[in-house]
Amino acid sequence: MISLKRTCLLLIIIVFVLSAFIQTAIGFQAYPRTELTDKVDELFTRYDRNDGPGLALGIIKDGSIIYARGYGMANLEYDIPNTPQTVFRTGSLAKQFTAMCIAILADQGKLSVEDDIRKYIPEMPVYEAPVLITHLIRHTSGVRDYLTLQSLALKSDADYYTNQEVLDIITWQNELNFVPGSQYLYSNSGYFLLAEIVARASGMSMVKFAEKYIFKPLGMKNTHFHDNRNMIVRNRASGYSPAKGGFRINMTQLEMIGDGGIFTTIEDMYTWDQNFYKNMLGSEELMDVYLEKGKFNDGSPFSYAFGIRVDEYRGLRTIGHGGSFVGFRAANLQFPDHRFSVIILANTSAINPTNFCRRVADIYLENELSAPIETQSRRTRPRSLNKVVNLSVSDMKKFTGEFYSDELKVVYKIELIDNRLKFTHKNASNYFLRPVSEDEFAINGIRLKFLEKKRSGFEVYAGRVQHIKFNRIK
Image (cartoon, rainbow, N blue to C red; front, side, top):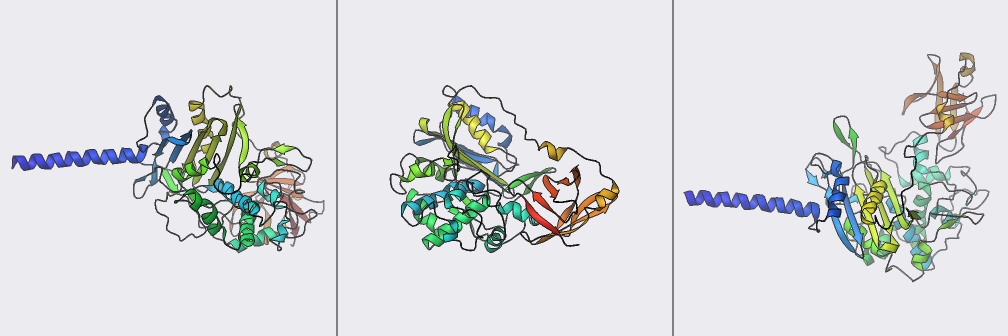
């Protein structure tokens, strides 16, 4: 009996030790622990918990992953931890893959980046100047951002709308934000349209094209463009945002790809990272084209290349991009001259992965980096949106009414309630308009500028969407 008890106790101890070892292996992937990795772990202490979401980290040096582990939980409902094998949605990190699809098609001679996009998408309006594929790639097209357009049309990321509805709202736009090639303004519409161009130029969906020409050749077995909201994805992380007393699930049912939609892992991103040094996806010239910085119409260069920024950090050349959508954040940052990279994939909206990539680089490249430059970290709104102008009740009455936008197919209603102008709509929260001049109002970070004294309409300015026109109908 005693022997049996001792045997059972020994078995329990063995199971406990093995369980602890397995959990450690999952979290740390058995990578060597050093003074540097201890410093890295200190950076992510707040995410290293079993009751909150977090991230997966990969550090690459000289062609190998030198440290990778997960912090926090991939799923809070089933107590599943994040690991380097966890599959994350990555937001705009997808743009570098979309642009690579375009680069490969150009390398194959199936399109030119100097093509007018109407060659492939004739539904697009004819604007004063043509929009070229290269304009979409480098965010110089002036095409209004569809996520902002949908928001102005009173839809949110939590709503469901189709790819056709996105294409519709883009093609409804009578104007561009600016002349193509004259300015840089980030636009998700550009990359949504690039995905459509890939499909039409190749004769296959971008999901299949990327699988055939990128993911399969590189062995990225756990990476795909996610265009089916009902698709089962093994080892997928859930997305979360902070909420009172904890966290809330923050996911989306949208199926758009191109501007986003890549699901991937740290280990697959390592494979992608290595292709920058030894290209396996096309001709020798492919990566040169891919990494070429953009130029404005006047010939001046800027840092955006093919879905990726070619820039510098503290005196060292960098290649990278960030991503942000619903409860996910992501970033990859490569220092090509030092064969060093940091990749962060997170399932919490309360994190800045690009900043953390730099802080990890600060640890490993301390002796190579120049002194940091102090910058203003807090983003402030334009002064014009902060000031308030006092208007009389009689003046405010002139701005009331119903206004329709042909480019959004939506009606905005402005009413005078309790001596204040209020924006109301059945599908939107009610907001008070804040006068910032005699004919201009701010509302939730958006600017409404009335066009003339007759108050027959106004234009909306909302960051990535400029001068959307609304005309009075009542």
